[in-house]
Length: 344
Ligand SMILES: Cc1cc2nc3c(=O)[nH]c(=O)nc-3n(C[C@H](O)[C@H](O)[C@H](O)COP(=O)(O)OP(=O)(O)OC[C@H]3O[C@@H](n4cnc5c(N)ncnc54)[C@H](O)[C@@H]3O)c2cc1C
Image (tube, rainbow, N blue to C red; front, side):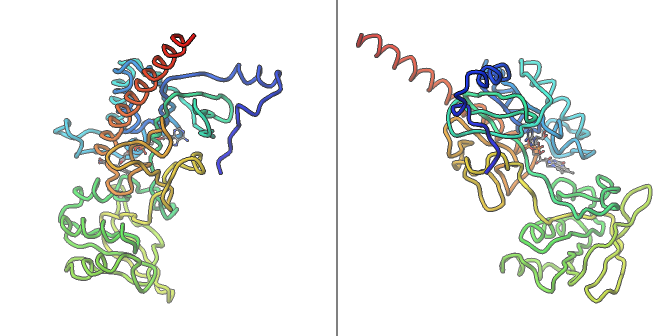
């Protein structure tokens, strides 16, 4: 269960006063500043919902960690990830989004308005909450892997596979995602090595069969990555170590991680329905979570597509869902007030 402070438990006047100084009430609070968060912000701001956004530990999101983005519509020549996210930000600010630096460190979704704590200090109460906190790819943690990130090391075959057309690449992992990434790369690249530390894959039977039947995929069983090799131009190979202790090198120009993602949803544990990995569950075809007024968009609720354009699309949906929710609530409150007045 996430850390949270219950506003309604504070009975002591003095505490209440101290806290009041730090509590701010907003209509729409957006947590996260990737493509999903910024798209939600653009739509919410244009709907006059005066959104407040907290950027989190990675302002601009995952695309700020990459170079060329060639598959986002509207950029025929491609664009650098950080530049693209700067443009998202400018567009959101142009319509009045209040973009702030800060991390959501706790949440109390036990009652409305929902309360989110920023940097363990400031509390924000929101009528509607849009969660766009993304999912972080897992890496092996090798120094050499870090060194060549964006220069041959990638955690997204769909995003970066094209840059390795007709070349030899490696995929690390043995689950369904690794099988999917390897199959995707096999359609683009000359040869795909799947590096797996066991003697059998974890992937489902059907995925295994597809991998085994793909001629240009070779599985390197019982092998772990010891080092990513490269020069000033990027990755040139991988040094592997067999379970027997024997070391060997393969020549590849791309090194793809497919060992899982971690959705950034910890602070909402206990309030929101999630799958076993922590992806927030949304109603099919919408961004509604199990709590009314709480919407999730982008990679934090999408274990399948994880693309900038799909994240942006769901950010748009989240803002529209929030707008409809808030106007319905306003209408209901107005009706209730009229009824009360009539009964007096
Ligand atoms: C190396 C790499 C290259 C990629 N290349 C492409 C590509 O070419 N094309 C493509 O379509 N996709 C690409 N992707 C995938 C794409 O980046 C993601 O699908 C997309 O960024 C998801 O958007 P998002 O808004 O859901 O989350 P993210 O971009 O992950 O943003 C999450 C945001 O939430 C914030 N956050 C997290 N926790 C908190 C918190 N507690 N409080 C406040 N804020 C918080 C973070 O600071 C961040 O701003 C790539 C991904 C990687 C890693």
